[in-house]
Length: 299
Image 1 (tube, rainbow, N blue to C red):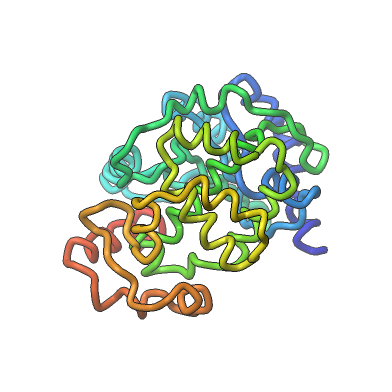
Image 2: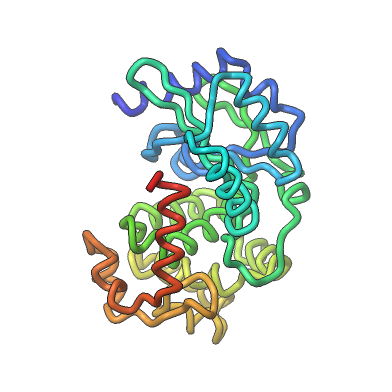
């Protein structure tokens, strides 16, 4: 209940600032968080979340950031030299920029700005974000009108987000990013939007975006947890040798990919995933982890 009050207050405050009205004509979508909660479970408050996630094409970052600055939001303080370097690294090697924050009393509102649904290490076909966001739908969140992705594209974004979380060496080393809740979101987004996210529709868009192995990977582990037989049709439609090779591996590109030494259940129940990868990290991996800590964790 307290979480619902807090999240409702955050949207009320953003509505008071006319934030979503001011960016209405911009191609953007609210992703994850409250929008995903409503698509998965029918209400804004079922999922727990700590920030507001926006997806916007890279070409519109400047416009969005100007709105945020005018409303009193600021990115994490850095020296000008460090900030410029971090900015360049975010734009060239990541999918997001440094978060924007506004503190009100003892509460901070954090807005994560994403400009891609793929990770920085991604080596495959890129997706045009303006086209991806072109059919965004309007949704009411705590009385605030926002734009979000239609269910099929919400599934694409969620699959790629979860694949990234389960395979990023930086995230595995610093956070417990393999959690049962992530598969719950996949399961209920699919089950409660089965016509929009039919096997045929999901296969069609996955072929277009060339993401079939990643969809198989995430659905495979969703089936491991929920065991629902309706998932079998999806698994058989998406099964490929490349997807099966990913199942016991981690790392977001071929040059950093490694084999897990523990099974999926152990990963899922672990309190410290770094214990299972630390001994296998290369010097390059360690430098990458440290750089990401500097940019996204402040040290």
